[in-house]
Amino acid sequence: MNIIFVSNKMAKAKTLSVLQTSLLIGALILVPVLLTLLFLTPPSNIKEQGMKALLPPQLKSTIINSQVHLDAYAKELGELQARMMRLDAQSQRLAKLAGEKDKQAPNTAKKPIVSVPLDGRGGPLVLASPMTELDLQKAIAELTDAVDARDESLSTIEAKILQQSVLKEMLPNGSPVAVAYNSSSYGWRIDPFTGGKAFHEGLDFPANMGTPIRAAADGIVSFAEHTPDYGNIVKIEHGSGLQTRYAHASKLLVHAGDRVVKGQEVAEIGSTGRSTGPHLHYEIRLNGESLDPRKYLGN
Ligand SMILES: [Zn+2]
Image 1: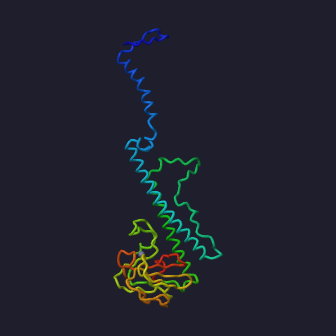
Image 2 (image 1 turned 45 degrees about the horizontal axis):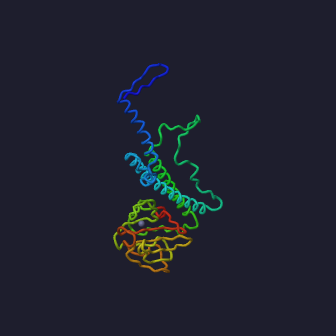
Image 3 (image 1 turned 90 degrees about the vertical axis):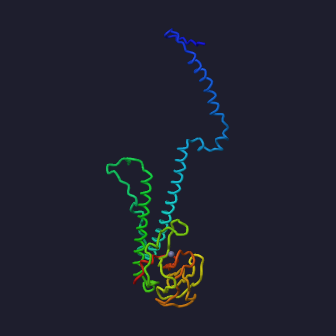
């Protein structure tokens, strides 16, 4: 069978071969069938499998990876937020300590933590290349370091103010145990039990079981008991909201209500409660908030 097209303009007949004709007819039949299949496929089928089912496997794994990365960034941002909240609380404490005359807290918003290169000639900022995942990771790490540095400097300022304040005579400044402390133990660190980052509010002194734990200043014992997390713990009140805590002890040598003097043995080193080995977990608190013990030791 031959189909003959006649073009008016050229007045010249064009013939299609059998092969061309069958291709044309095939296409005329196939196109509506394909269109019908595309539009009439029950939508429930798509819904059941989800949009991801329609994607090629390579794109699917990219989407899953992106989700994993987004989750990781969300977690890191959450941690940054927690750090900022601590800084805010610390700034407020400092403002209180500084008194009425100088109520202005250190303004963390004054200086941009992440500096954006500004074009002096004006106009929109056009980055040479879009921000890569590596850039993002670097920015988060830099921001975390900057926040940590501020935390450290605020703790130093706080200690200086306290050492010049009316509280200076009561500050617990004795060493609670005659061994070196783990200097990286205070502050943000990986929790050995949960694996997540958490603020560790005490200073750890790894020492042999039974080593004497001594009161860092004169005071009155307010608590000497076993708790699930701190294990055997002694809390001593030094007045004006200052408190020291000595945790994970193997043995308690004092009772609530006892008056103790600086250097007096109050407990023995142990590994009770949430502890991975024999050590003293030592805390200094002011009105319930933890201070950096490193700033008050050795005076
Ligand atoms: Zn600890």
